[in-house]
Image (tube, rainbow, N blue to C red):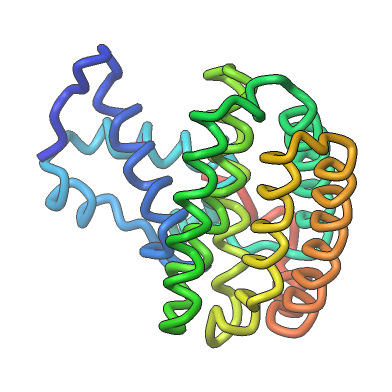
Length: 234
């Protein structure tokens, strides 16, 4: 049962965050149907609350409502990816420029995350590698100290995870390259080499967008064939 959060968040907000976390952690996959009755039974909340949560997920770009069929975890196409990376560049490059990104406590948190990612990589835990890679970028954005931007970026991370999981195995996305690159960015930050860290992050984002575009083109060609009028209705 979902309990009301101590921070006075509503049940809808708490459940919405929980479902978003399930997406970020790879537990909900693209195209998976979100069935009202199942969610009511799982979380022991009212059907009206579930409907509001589903509307919220659609609004946040994490689900798609198809008339007479239901609500589904969203599947992304290449045009969606371009929008995501435009947003990433605006938020993340600003984050790495700010003083908060270079405070020792923040750098330690990033470093601990990278150590965990390296261990996951060694044991070929590809889903965990993806989760920790997203966490690296989340921690970086937290340096801005803005709750609103952090919430916005969590939605971006959830959208990215849905792209990670469109193929048959996350190994095609989570290569050692990304963890090594994140380690380099962190090292430059620890050394106070701000301009170099920003340049590496910029190159990282460009390479990441190019790599994910290839994955989307290969594994989701049918996404482009869905009529626009069928989406987000009902």
